Length: 114
Length: 115
Image (cartoon, rainbow over the protein chains, first blue to last red):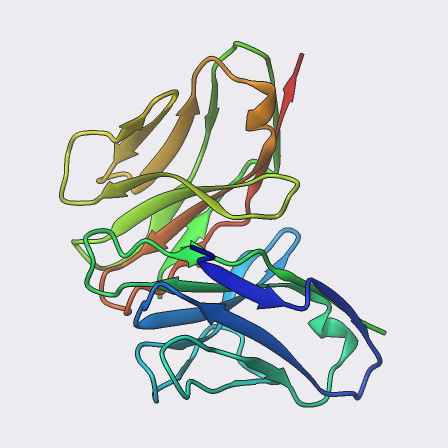
């Protein structure tokens, strides 16, 4: 079982360009999340989705958009990248309503915006 | 809004010794979940241990245990018999049980185990 996959592993992007980070899970979890990790700040929630067809804003949503067309995929799009979006991005999923609401994380994407 | 604070940016310990990582949190909910995640240099997030707020007994997973003080809103992680493979960033995280599983993370503590 792959769990959660993310692509690409890393990327260097010119400021002003757009990019989509991909996330796919094979656990049939209903909830998915996008976090960004910055040194000294921990992980912060960007967007989330409780079920296919619905999305919500997290703590730091500005400059990012998401969609949830089906259960398995949850892409994150940067419409016009800025250097402050340089970060490591993690996708996660969980079975909401499960015993512990444990989240499972993908391997992360390191994005550098120049 | 819920918050999680880890006040120790870095910690170090000798192999086979015991170390405690601190975490405090704030939430207005009475039933919630607390987690410690480990992030080794590989970047993978690994769940170490979890605690349900309504359980008074402290969770234990092999060499890892927690000291959960609900009234003080404190959730520290104790690592016994530290091993070189414990070297990692450790994150404390809170799920308040009402936010569809969304986690609030602390800033992280870098733990280095020395031989």
